[in-house]
Amino acid sequence: MSKPTLTWIGIILAGVIVIAAFAAYTTTQLYTTQTESLLGYLESRIITRAVASEGSERVIYVNGMGVVYTTPDEAVVQVTVEASNTSATLAQEEATRKMASIIKAMKELGIKDEHMKTSGLFLTPIREEKTGLKIIGYIARNTLTITVQDLSKVGEVVEKAITSGANIINSLTFQVSNEKAKALKSEALTLAVQDAKTQAEVAAAAAGTKVIGLKSLTIGGIYLPTRTALAAEAVAKDTYIMPGESQITVSVSATFLIE
Image 1 (cartoon, rainbow, N blue to C red):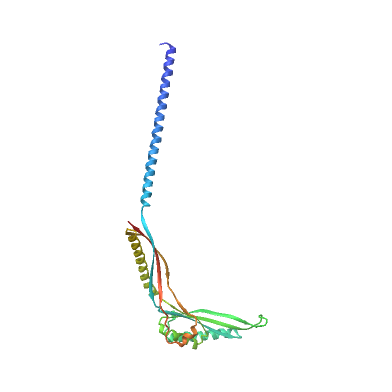
Image 2: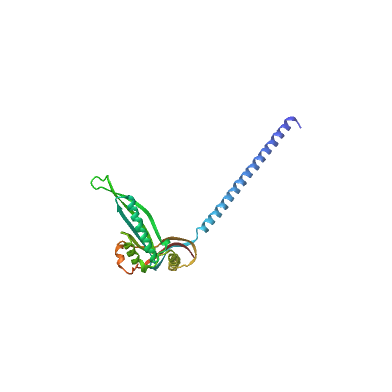
């Protein structure tokens, strides 16, 4: 074969090789693109299906309330001793002496040490009225908080405090003791959950379905009331105090699954 013929044959073969390589590259890219598209499609369908499944839960939201009625079994009496004197030392000594007398009287009534608490001794200067600058005396104050567990003794406690030296009755408060409140809170919580479940069942039945389970439950506020008698000085004349009825309230928020 002549040299020009061989040259043309080489050129043709090189062109065939280039075309074949280009075709192979194009096919590979097309396959890769299609594969990626297919995987993306399948992934989106799986995610969509999962979200749809997760979001397909049928639920009902309700609030429940539990109320337990009771009567306070404790009273807290707060009294203050106030003594005045031109001498700060003498005023403090008098207030301290009167407070010791009150504490002794409370112990005689059966009040334990752990049920009495003093808030400290405070000293206030008495100033001359005209100028307000000159100190002419001092007022010493000492406050005692008494927890009375026998309500039949409340009137006697107040009266004894006054006759022993207390000249201010700050407050009289009736409350539920911690021991009693603990049991009542559990009872009120049970009632609150039952109330929420009943509401959910009634609402579901009205909608033509039924409750199949509980998804979430949140305990809300717990209300423990106290009752305060402001005119506590008058209590000393009574032989027995009626604290009245109180209620302990517990609220819950619940999410129930329905069919």
